[in-house]
Image (cartoon, rainbow, N blue to C red):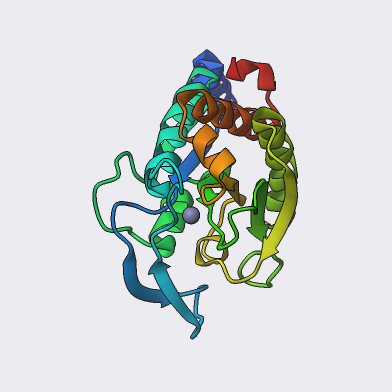
Length: 236
Ligand SMILES: [Zn+2]
């Protein structure tokens, strides 16, 4: 048995370190081409149900759909993370269909044994003056989020800081949510970054540019890498 152990150790050591240890980050660009009015339980075993996807917001000046902005940032972020040696799984790679809903999104992260489930959104408000970046994370609920609460909160703090630094929009801080289906079903540390407000003309104009989509991806990459204990300089 000893020789078998030595042989196995030799095989493991022979594997490239990045392949053996590369963490998985699941990127979830919010929404899709069409909303999904069907409902789903807000957590495992819950009788409280919420709509699968209300469809998101859109740019007050640019006319850009939030789903498309989220995807553009996520596709850029995928490139940055893969270059940094992180494995990336996407919940979608085009804006083309009916939203799969939040239980399905969380299940993709769970199946991938994600080290981080990173959800990318932009916000909307009835008051066009409302602006800034905020990051949402799960609140503590025994049986649902107790296993991911601390790590998710830490991820949210780090990612919020890096996105604010990258975009230089006002810092609206963190928000704990108990009612997010995609949080309550997640077995992976999870955050939802609201990059800015597409209903604010200034932030909409900027977020519609490739330069700001790149900045957003860079901020998210730095935050994700720091959370994973890797040097954020690897984001480029
Ligand atoms: Zn959204």
